[in-house]
Image 1 (spheres, rainbow, N blue to C red):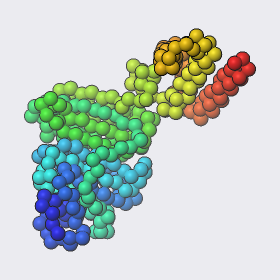
Image 2: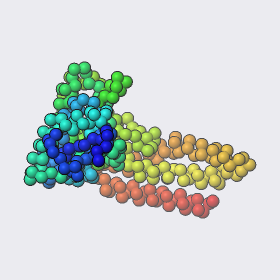
Image 3: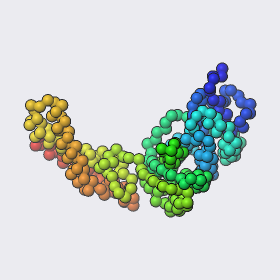
Image 4: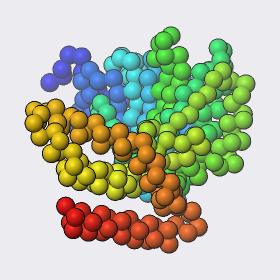
Length: 336
């Protein structure tokens, strides 16, 4: 039974208006987004990178386009999904039936080689989360330069999609006059992969080409859990979260132990909430200012190791950290 307001999405690559088997079409209800799932055959990665760059340019020019995500199932996977979001179900239908989209999906079928397709269209999830490192880029495009900017974005997408560790892209059009910029999220498997792309000669050359189209351009990395302690002016990748946590434990443990030994007896007559608040305030203050700065200074060589000596540095750093933990445990076990 057909539901009023439901959207029938043709199978990827099938001409709009053609006869469909109802069991093969996708019912997406009143959704504003669709996910196209596909499998890229081995050896076709370069051609697929070029294809997704062209797809990005075409969909970003569609009426009421909101955003695009191109995401692999996992690093190195041949299975991908392309999430296309629009402002309304009607805009999504127009895009699904768009001749440009149909032609691009037909090209993808040719890329798959055997004339058969493993692609599926389905209602897209409202949110897609990953554990990857992400660079957020906001761009204000000069009036009248939108098409030139889209073609430039196509070129940079084609290059970055071939870089090692690439884990997908989100492209979001300007939402309103209050949010007049394009937003791009570029995901990589880890900080080293992202840094390799950000510092590459290929990226710098393509960025230089954007000058005539772009009014303003900004880039930043998504915040890490301890951004205030590990911030830096060089825009380097933050240390891995587990290393940051290890340092916090290293400096927080002795503070808590000393408070238990010396501060708690002084606060014994106060209500529990008040004494706990005072203790926490002192702990946070000591950790945030002198202690974390000293720990980062002393173990900075381990937090961001030289890539050429990475494994040796990691082993030495973990050994040093284990020794410091042991010293703390020994001292407080003996004297408290």
